Image (cartoon, rainbow, N blue to C red; front, side, top):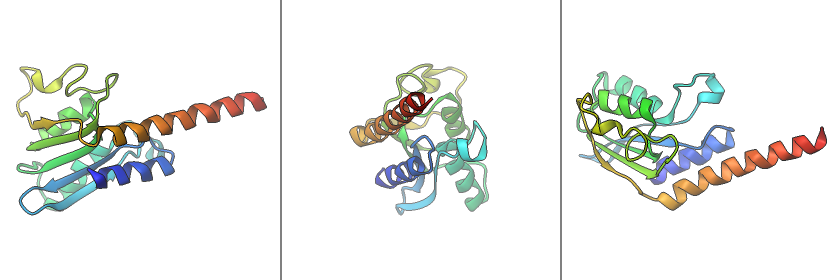
Length: 154
């Protein structure tokens, strides 16, 4: 999770929503792939950290399933990412902060509880929750302050 958090910090520096994701092979602890949000940079609403990390891992391993792999992400995945995690057959999902508004694992639609969900990873949330949540709070606070400054100048 520490690596995912470092990726989230880098995303914030790039003015992207600070979320990082890392696909890990639990057998040897090797990082298979890693990514951070790129939605703003590439103008693609689907360029979430989880999706990008899954794509990179599938490309690296030359497969469309990541059976036996673990995914670490700094924020509870949204519905789109929860579905991608299921389709990729990720074994274990570890996430940091809970996303009460947009999350879809333990919040919101609780995607893995749906009878139409065919693969349910083992889920553990709240890992480094304070740190993962704080980077998001700081990022959005800075965004709001920037808007206030711009409003005062106009």
